[in-house]
Amino acid sequence: MNSYTGKSLSWEVREGVVEVELHRAPCNEIGTEMLGDLEEFAKALETFSRETSAVIIHSTRPAGFCAGADLRELYQGAAPLDVEARVAGVREFLHRIHAVLNTLDDSPLTTIAAVQGVCFGGGFELALACDLIIADKMARFCFPELRLGLIPGFGGIPRLRRDVGNAIVRDLLLTGRSINAQKAAAVGLVSQVAGEGEALRVARATAAQVAKFDRATSAAAKRFAKPIPHDELRREIDLFCEMFTRPAVMEGLKKFVESTDALPYLP
Amino acid sequence: MRTIEQTTGEILDLAAQHFKVPRASLSPQDDFFKKLGIDSLQALEMLTRLENHFGIELPDFEMQGVSDFRTLASRIQARL
Image (cartoon, rainbow over all chains, first blue to last red; front, side):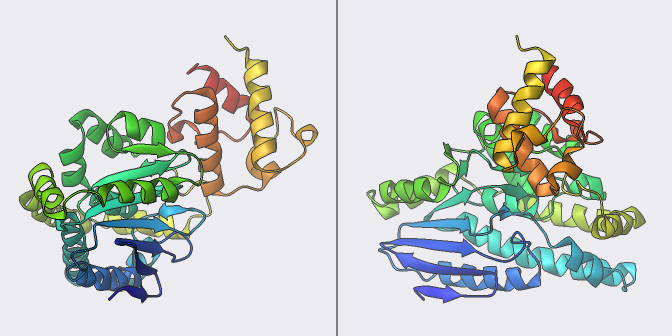
């Protein structure tokens, strides 16, 4: 399939590059609708022709790349359930999103996240599944999960650990603070910092460079350089589900959903 | 080294430019959430602009509880 238009995202193959556009208001929150579209993309990813060399994931939402999991949907879906049913629902969702992100991580194509604005939580985890992150200078990266009594659940800790030093892993997780594109580049998360509004253009230029190389060689280099931490990813799901049984989590989610604070995004 | 007055002035210039309000309408003691009518994401944008402009890192938790330009300037000044 060379093009697709879903409710949350669309994609099109242009000159050997798959451009995936996230366009769900307000900021591409990942709930069941976005997950369904991502699953369609993951299926298609395994079928793109040999002439396809790269994938660019970007957002058309002005607020940013992706604000993370849809916490309102999560809270509203979980609140009426008993603990066992809550955890079962969350575990199923996590297995599905992990399958999508593992497919993206494992793709023989070179994958690029073109990031602007907010790249938080699950959005950050989506970017971390890509091979390269190109961020415009207004981008911000954050794992705010601990403020809800949770850990990142879409593969964030294992993939962050894979990519950067442990000191910045601890800094991001344990403070919940957001960092800008320059800082993210300085610690090795971001490969290129683009001018404001220029991340997609830089990503396209990078994809054009990538296309010059033999695909099989690029795929082999990627497999060698970027092993998928499957064991840690499985343990992360278990740990997340364990955390999700705690009453403090539902209290944290309720507080977030009902917040009228001017700074609910600030951990 | 900038003085606190210079830092405050630069913040006001940036805020006026970014949020497209007359510079003369902003003063150091203003509550920027109320004065500029900004939401959480816009506050993050402002934080990023300030970090880029001053070449500093200002953790967002240091912005919590800060609502006037003058106090914000003192937080930035401490990192210059």
